[in-house]
Image (cartoon, rainbow, N blue to C red; front, side, top):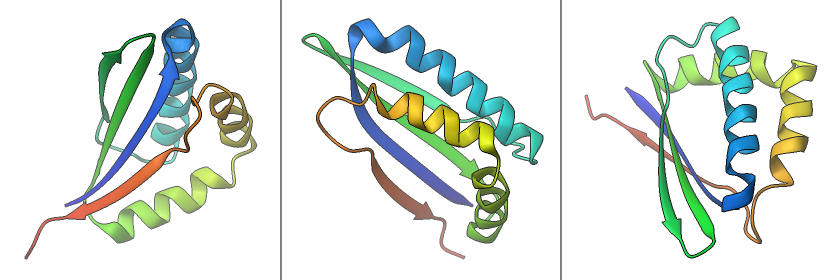
Length: 101
């Protein structure tokens, strides 16, 4: 199993719009074959919300094939540009994990 984790902060007032963008992105990922639903966790910190998005794939190769298709879709580029406006003073942090065989 391969897991991709994203962590970022947004203003609480932007939470609903950020969630809408995420749902739209999920539909695009599903179009290209993602078969496992991501898990999104939230933690309120003052007037910010820290978001932890966890995505699951069968393997790193499956992830790479899927993401190459998704990244070529103009809709995901538009959603990314809208989403990045909400990220609060930090970049999106990414981590990768795999199970040991």
